Image 1 (cartoon, rainbow, N blue to C red):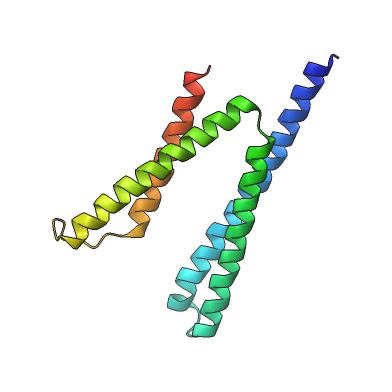
Image 2 (image 1 turned 60 degrees about the vertical axis):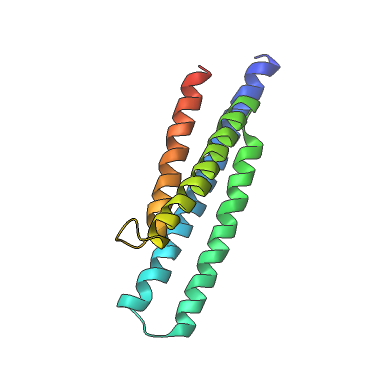
Length: 139
């Protein structure tokens, strides 16, 4: 086996491991967020417990960010470019779309309150579509 084949096998294994680590941290963050949001409504009536739940969520979020950084560092140059391009597009859409959405609410152009969940979904969908487009572009 030549070094190029063995190296690509190492990259693939490292990418799988980093992706799995990122998935676990992301799941921990999402679950801790759900606990922090729904715990006070359904389980406890304590600001102290809510504060602890939020701090756990922030800690899981930091773990997720670090796992994402490690994941990006382990990718080959093309995959890193695709991911970073998608993140840049998602950031731009979040800023432009989020501020426009907020302005629509502030100026009463829309009757509903601007909700952060809508912006989070927009960011997620933008990132997902951007990754798929990037993968197809460089095939």
